[in-house]
Image 1 (cartoon, rainbow, N blue to C red):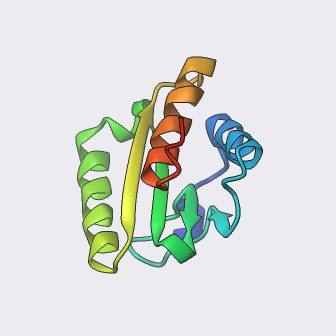
Image 2 (cartoon, rainbow, N blue to C red):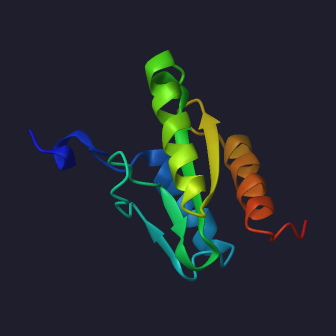
Image 3 (tube, rainbow, N blue to C red):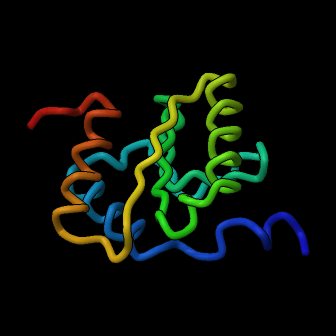
Length: 116
């Protein structure tokens, strides 16, 4: 099994909803999704290359385990050493309308578009 097979098997429903909301808010300019960064085989959910900002949506069913948390922390440290700002947003699927609003507020603040 190659590293690509072990990485993100598919885009989650929450990621699709957040992408739609980011698009509606006009926040997808210069953004890429599911961009492979060869660094511990990580694929950020949303990445603004020009701003050096990365957002991960972390489903609590996977990312609350000790091993996953240690891996996430290690990835964050490595990314930060390379000049990236990293935001991890935990969520409990399925994503509710209120949860989506909270995620969008966090991303807007992270991107310095906190106009609300």
